[in-house]
Image (cartoon, rainbow, N blue to C red; front, side, top):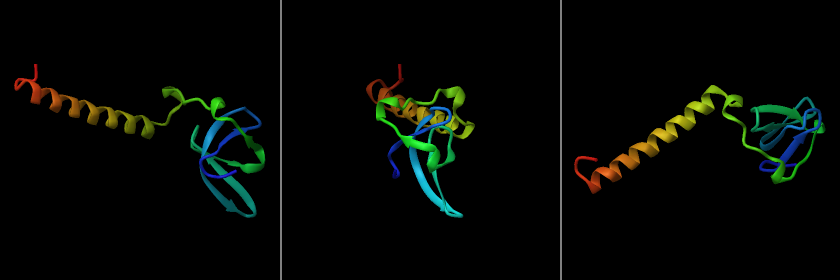
Length: 91
């Protein structure tokens, strides 16, 4: 397994994309994006991309939700600028 691969945690069936791999005390750990946790690579098995699902908002961390809100805000600001170029009043 390598960064970018999909992996399934055998105990729960959680599927995530591997973001990082590290070795500590002769144990190889893989960071899955699903819950942003490191898993012992021996507890993982390869997964297919179609097994991967986007984590629901309630399962995401606060930081991740804030990042998404910031991206939405930037998109809205860009749309507002484009609209104001079409009609000076923005309406």
